[in-house]
Length: 194
Image 1 (cartoon, rainbow, N blue to C red):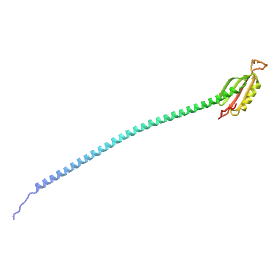
Image 2: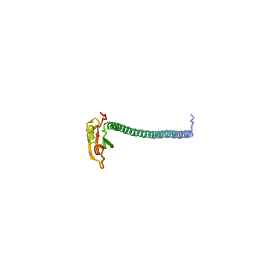
Image 3: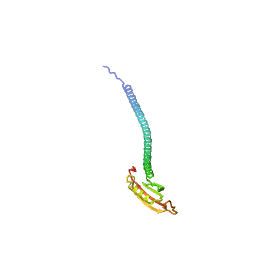
């Protein structure tokens, strides 16, 4: 029987070197895969960050647009309030002018010939009449007529009647007197009955 001896050492060394190369190659491949994975994750995170920044910029722009629109709406509301106040003021002036117009028409129609008005003032719903007369009786009857005119005046007060300084006489010897009347205008109505 013949024994053949084989030297397996070179094959073992070659096999170990191939194993080492394979392990190194697998490690390198794994490191490459990890690097590619890290790169892809970083790229995705960078993309997310960029999208978030764009979104935040969009939000900032929308917020500034909304703030601008709110400011415009507020200025329009303020303008509407100003216009409402102006309309109310004009309506109040119109109402007062109607009252004053009715008062003037009434006074013009009802004043006696012997009574002359020198000054009229209208303030806070009170009409002040100042004038002169040669006939105090005509003034008294006119005052009684004003007091009876309930649709126009709520209260009529004769402040004074006095002999005018340097009073001149007219036919019949009557002297000129000066007077002041304060008449409170009826609120809410300005109808006049003649």
